[in-house]
Length: 441
Ligand SMILES: *Cc1c(COP(=O)(O)O)cnc(C)c1O
Image (cartoon, rainbow, N blue to C red):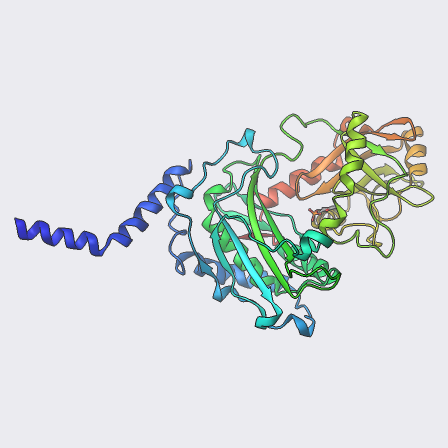
């Protein structure tokens, strides 16, 4: 008997790391309200990587165009070098309820980090770690010249329980274009998508089990060289955090938004960088957003130029549906002329509506004069914003030079924005099979 319990003791001690791992997994399961098995997570290089490399890679590869890197970028990072350090059980956060999620208030347990050091030959090995604070020198370029850029994408829990990304190739392409614009190193989009898929897979219980919410993915790239010269940064950090999000404008936002259109404020200009997702484009908009809020208005309609052309609404692309001079129904959005952020949602809306052929679709200039005239003649049907955060967001009124223009977006019988919202979410939540939706587990 004595011998036996000694033997048992030794066995327990020998295998305590396995026991820890087992308990850790159980704890993760308990902390989720999901019924699905979650065998894919903890074990480093087994299940998840197999899932990522097969169907996933072949689809993703076919979508991603190769990119040309500047010579000083040096070596690229690779998903195959990814290391994972999991959060300890006591570090795991409680998941919020859908109605308290809001936008970007809660974060998952893990993050992705990839350093770039020119002195070490380029990109370093990607690592997934517990979510933690970053430690940086106070002279790091990001703090002084806003050498920062970001992306916004989402992971959706489909009606079949599978998790999908929506056109991640588009985000990778845009992120590389933005990196180039501020002298930060470019990377292989497919390798980052695979790392992101793995991160989401590890934090998969954070992808809400509902169609009213999703997991927001925020890839971020910053210049961290600790010198004060306005020059390209010889060190950079690409990191990604994840945040479960509900409806962008809060739960009470079934109605349309009211906009301030004040031509004295400009978001982007020819030759500028308004068409890139640089952090420096957003800080100056906060003041204008506050000016709108003071007037009781919800968002800013960004105008440009002598003829007050519409460019964007808040941080969304803008669309209008109207009856054109030939009496036809037409969907119009401003062209990508350097003033417009090339939205993934914008591109998807154009492609879907063109394929339907139910109305004319055009990229063209929209001016406030045109909007006023169309409202007067009752030919303006809808105005809506479009972006990842909300898919589409109907507009109800525009405050322009002291005048309140009523936009009847919500009064249409079969509105275009609603048809687009339904189709887009059907694709994202796996109700409709579509090559834009990439299943990750
Ligand atoms: C991110 C963003 C958009 C929308 O882009 P999506 O890829 O559709 O999310 C539109 N306008 C601005 C200014 C943006 O920052």
